[in-house]
Image 1 (cartoon, rainbow, N blue to C red):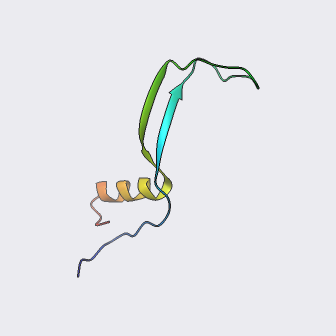
Image 2: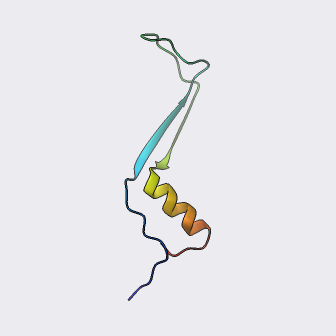
Length: 57
């Protein structure tokens, strides 16, 4: 039987992050200057952090 130190229950998602020059006003459009995508979600982030600190997840 495999033993684990931490069990994270929750959601995992895929984040799409766009950088803009200013916060647009309601109904205003803004052009993004940069784009980054990465995995995320509270349970996924907690599991990744615990694993990076040496826990068996």
